[in-house]
Amino acid sequence: MDEDLDLIKRAGAGEREAFDDLVLKYQKPLYSLLYRMVSNREDAADLLQKTFIKAFTALSSFEQRSSFKTWLYQIAINLAKNIYRARSRAELVSLDDVIIKRNPRTLDALIAKESRFLLRRALVKLPEKQRITLLLRVQEDKKFEEIADIMHCSVGTSKANYHHAVQKLKTLMKEPEATELGSKERGEAHEVHE
Amino acid sequence: MKCTNNNIKELLPKYRKNSLSGEEKLHIEKHVKTCEDCRIELSVLRMMGVDAVPDPGETFWAEMPDRVYRSVQEQKARKPRFSFGALVERMVLPRWALAAAAAGVALTVSWLVMHPLPKDSAPSALLTEESVYEEGIAADAVLAHPVQNLAELTSDQLAAVDAWVSSELSGIASDAGTTMAFVFDTDLTEDLSDLNPREVDRLATMLQKLVQEEG
Image 1 (cartoon, rainbow over the protein chains, first blue to last red):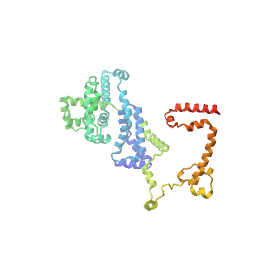
Image 2: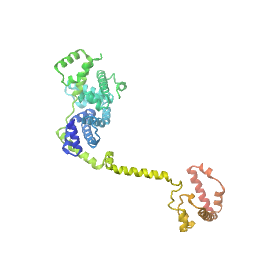
Image 3: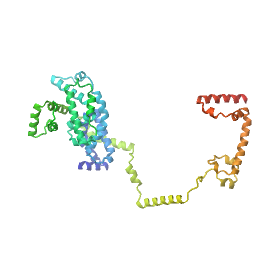
Image 4: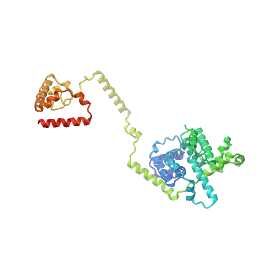
């Protein structure tokens, strides 16, 4: 944290090395988050660059109420939300198409890929806040306190959103077809807002 | 059946990451064997973890700082960002200057309170009583300028203007003949206000035609 503040101060004063250090330090975790949100390399790379540009052009407005990393995550999530929504809709393609495209060699691979497809299909059905909370918790290994900071909510809300997301995923994974109808409404009813 | 053991659920992500102590790990494994709900939850978490992020490559990572730096510099050069803080900084005056400015404002306000301006004292830049008398401007010259406030004219000036208007209008009235008389004799204000633009156009065309015929 202190190291970041020093780098931010020096980067703000125009020191190129500090600027580069900040980008190098956070580019991988941010890219990972963005890729998982948009499921596309080009979009993730583009959003990563945009995130840094936005952060560095507004560096003077960073108020240190949260860590620099959390601030970057907030910017990245906000930028990715639109593409994330569009991708979520695009993910709803037929299972046959996906299997043909991926050309599985073995039955195990087919099952694994089918499971991953089912998981993705279930994920896109989750309300946005639940989905991002789950992603931050499971794939980014964030603590609930950090998720609360990033999502601008209380720790209790982030825990509740995670819990509802997991419950919903389990149901969707067990009975993907049966739960398709009306699943959105039920999921959104559970979404916890501040 | 839905499991309500929150302690286990809290530890499941860590179990997936293999970051639990031996004892905690055994505790989870024992629970998961008998709890279908947690077993499914763990498999969901595992599947999410398996969904790996493809590495864009070393070149991508190495070039990113430079790409970002160039874009930031381009943006700064293209659109200088407005900063309210910087504006305030530039506008900051020494305390004695602020005190002097405040004293000046207070003095001006108290002067205006003690010596209020007359209501109609706004000077007419184009016509004043003094200018008419002192320079002997004729009514024609006076009327050549747009008058902003008729109340400023003296009775002599008004009489001169009235005489000039009468003489000008009498010439126009005689030139217009019957058409002018028709217009003056009939009060059409209310009727005309009811017309729509198309009807007004038609009426104007008719009147123009009538003037041409009479001319």
